[in-house]
Image (cartoon, rainbow, N blue to C red; front, side, top):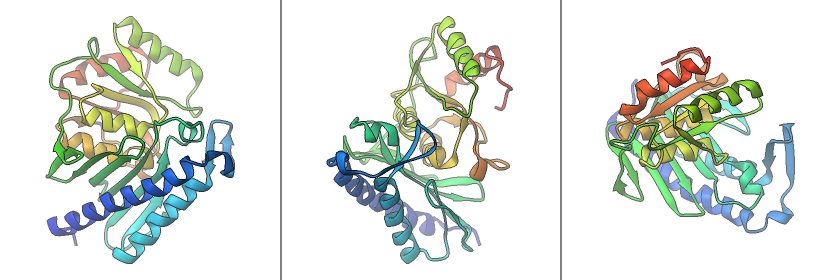
Length: 271
């Protein structure tokens, strides 16, 4: 049975609560970084700490009590299937590398997806106490105030969030940046894809592009951008939830510009 408006609203309220609680727990670790145990997952730039694991455990435990039939997909513990049709997608700390370096650009990202459509998206940045929040049909807010994507600026006037990682050949990254700069654009990167998507929803960035992104990094941001009046490719189609996908999103006026840029960089069109 599809989730009702009341079902979505209840999960939205819990997502905001969990983002704040998870953020407070993460901050308790952030304030004593020297004592953290850190593991390397696939390479020197792919790390996880006890903070990540603790925050995800907190969120999973609370969801299991409140909505025991919901599924949960988390970056650290993988997929726990449910029967309700609702799937929570969680990144306990997106931006672990800056987090461990003592920098402020990290966040807690929580989404609820139903039938490959994000119906709740919450991203909380504890270091600035910014809560980016959205739910299906209810719009998007920043600390309770309505927010919208950038209304006018194009790629030549605004900043494009750009995500890259070691899954992508370095030559592809260099080519995309080269084409963007040659076209008069400029990229912005802070090592947290979730935060950059939230900044698109808030109108701080005009758009976002990444060759391959995991769903826990972007599901919440996709809901935020849609509810803030933006557009996005169908990231969650096919195997996007479990295996990730390319992502493009932004303010409506940059769609054509970004499509041309992607093609000029030799990336296969996907939107």
